[in-house]
Length: 189
Image 1 (cartoon, rainbow, N blue to C red):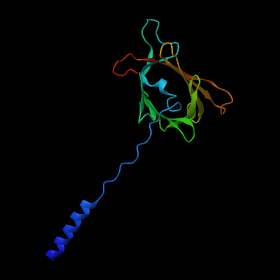
Image 2: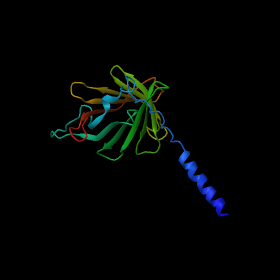
Image 3: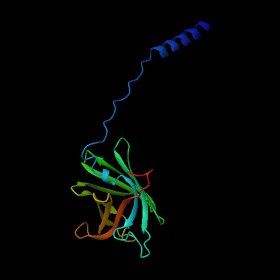
Image 4: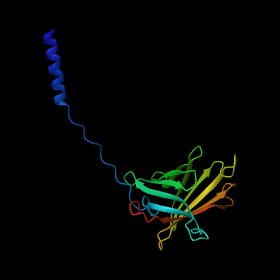
């Protein structure tokens, strides 16, 4: 019996010594290039205003939110953390999908369920479109088209939303925000 135990222990020790290390998987290429970089203009720390209403009559800022937009995961995703002055925070995760050759965004807000958008970089910025459940009230889903346009003169980004209740035949205004660099050095672009 003692001989069997010693033989088993010796066999286990030998097996441990002969195991070859597993080679690490090949590294994945970084998500870079024209398609992957098309939304980089939105990356930064921002103060967000209703477009054209940056100041109140008394000269104070009329900020509606702060937003931190980061490029993450080896450059393969852009994440927004939307921090409004009033309730209803949320955030989005956006990435370029090489299979569909489209940008895809998932928005998660304070109301139940995600909202999915798809689109692409255009000469003037980025356009994403998706169906937003109940945007027009209970049971009234709307097609939302978001157009992001960088302003190279002042570093701002305009996010204009339009809504359609007839599957894109006609469009009306939904929201219009201007993202201005926050000036916060620890979060700046």
